[in-house]
Length: 408
Image (cartoon, rainbow, N blue to C red; front, top):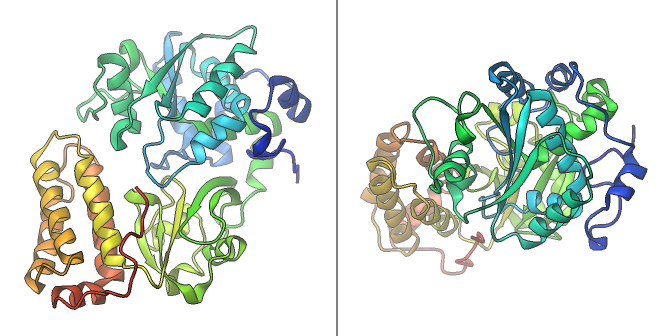
């Protein structure tokens, strides 16, 4: 096991961005993106860390196939998930690793331009990435920075391309997709910054090395943002690490935890009894009806109201609608308003029935996947907090519980 070959290995976070000289001294020079790189990425089993979990090798191969030597690479550091801070931390302290991945991508898919798309509010990340790029003397492609708007959907790949092309950060649901025609009408590889950092390590140490990492069916390590209990913050873990192990590491006690939000606002609530033994492995999570998503693990304490926490998330998701279709604009708002009324003890049992009915009517009918995420969160809330919802509907509430449970 090569201990220095980790995303967060190297100088402590408090030391600031790792310089190019420090980066090269620790990991060695970046190899060229030879013809075998895409095959190695595919062989590693790496999936994207932006939330969708699509196999990275297949995405690179598709862009390379469509490229005529004038493709584009979009480095996605928008990170619109409210509970996630992993991407901005990675860019702020390991910018050279992200840039390595971007340069490899440009070479591998035949790109003439790299666009660094970083959240406008993430000043430390933007500054670190700009300074790190300035340390590079020769680049295989043009490079420019675009500040991503502070909106949940802005990080979705078609929304990112739409914003760069037209200044409108809303998803585009009609073909062609970005890998066919994206920035400036050229085939575009849209890749999350953590994914690119992993590829910078795979290029150096190989796909066999990467497959040695991880404990479950999925291989490798991943960054997770932990909140709600204990020390929290960003950690790098092996895929397959159980939630209970992670809880112990950050000081989240099982007796004081009632549920865990896995995957962030687009994720699912999991009851503590099920969560503690659940491996953070995409395959195992899918079998349990959950997803690692954007790498968020948020612990909900027993003195916090799960109904209120879920209503808060649903209200945020409704406010973040791309306003492109009725099911999202009107459906999510009706659901959020009813969930808020339920949390405030102003609803009835009939409102729980309405939530269930509306969820079925909205799911799968949006112009993009945004409403599906909200409906998935609602479904998990009804399963995990169903008893509490019934108490709220009887106007009993849970007055002893803390109302604000999830930070937006």
